[in-house]
Length: 330
Image (cartoon, rainbow, N blue to C red; front, side):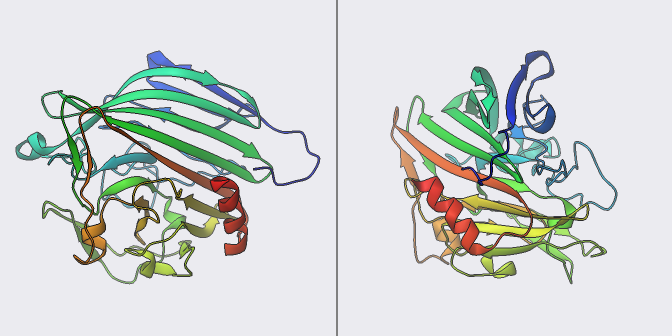
């Protein structure tokens, strides 16, 4: 995944801090991202994510609020992986903001172990284990994830390879729009909004996303199929890119799906207010009932999801993203 040239490859260091419940990822000594699993979050996440310049491309709120940010959907932090209906449990919407009367219907992803870290030239890796548990702490799924962090001139990238194994019984991922790999981007990478909107989750609970001042809001989605803007939501594609300007710097984010993933090519749960997610497990919702998946794992059965997230300095073209995509699937 090198971009050419003769520059010395940057050093990627992956540094665990068990007492802080985090693993830091540094490029030539400067922060790129961290894998964090504080007790205040209902799932581990990569937070924040930065471009090669150091510009932060993910939202700060609720962990580190910044002026002018939206304060909706407190469960959307960094770059995460979960689903809105697993055996009837909602792992997507869970946060400390959930009222007590809904807590029993929520699932939590609990970090269990850092299995392996490696640092090196141009890339580093982190392997972790977590469990997807119900409100009583009973585990439905074991999650074994390998992150590969890559760096080059003008490029940062994360591969997330996640294997889910059903424990002590079958597990069904009921078709649901809330999934699967998602990130919440910085305000500058949102699409300009013209009206307030109300978004309702699968349980019928609504969140209002107000119209804010659009000054400096520059985001624009485009999928591998040429669909653009808000129209990307609910369409299939191999990848989707998001371009914009952060702190005066043009940047391009891209999320790449893999042909070996269940539900390929994924549907996109990409919203103008800053949610950028790929969801291959919501067929009934996204197809208006024409398709259905309800993906099921038998007890002891596993499946693996492979995704790559690119953070590129500059405004990339669709052809450039397709080149990165072909590199990924090779």
